[in-house]
Length: 377
Image: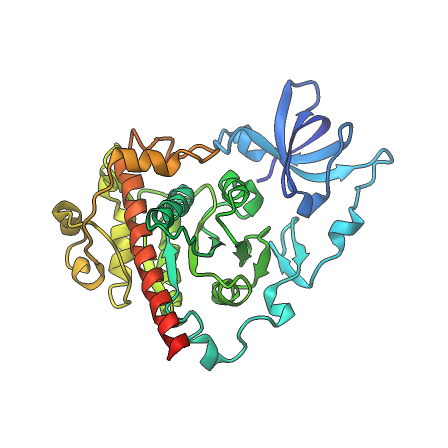
């Protein structure tokens, strides 16, 4: 059940193109923070009356202690409609909910492959990096930048981010996206299904991958959820199971799936010790689908995934040291943590994200070498 509350906007705390954080007074209560997505409701001004979804805060569900603006109310008591925001495409996201809204999708523009025969080979061996948690995104992209600079030429591959449906649905919620784009490390963002707010909107995963290839001309594609994944402690009850479908789709479209394993030495839960049971379960369900996984000759981790290692594991050996990681994260304006833990507290998580980046970089360089040979053939 949804808990609704009225409030008055007292001031704007933070102003972004796709997100506003505001301070609201709810009745006679103390001031509270609320998030507003201008794509849904338009841009708020101080003094406006708003209706908010306060469910998570009321129930103590830990969504950052913030409310979410659902509607703006004018002085006449009628909803405020942003005419400019209302001009969009014809594909509805969040369908049949109070927050359904229309977006312009790549499919409407007919700028992606339309032939099935073309689509099945469309990715042309493009590395597609798949992860379970949003915290893997900045760690991976920063590692790619470090590796690119270390090679001497400094040629950064064009990286496109696709946000899956496993976590938050609004892309605007991600501070990591804003930071990475401010550093010029992402060429574009895509949201598909019921996620929304990407620079390109798509109907499904297949067309999202095609849009990354044809719209953004990506050299690498990263697919992982936004903030806030779900786990229940059961064998299959976690949002990371979406990785099975993602891996299979990437392979079917001619890409190279590269899985970032979820690894931890600091998680107190036994099921997440070493390689998380989430990663091990995903590998079990895609054992007949080719993918790449870099475990750096770690016999303990290889033993954890058992016979799946024979099908999927690519072995490289070039351990990451502490000074290298400090160089990787030095210029990042945000905070690099996983489940609240820093790289100092849980180095295994970040180290294996780096190993995945090195694997992706090697595949990118191999693909570039082949492409250059074709050009001069």
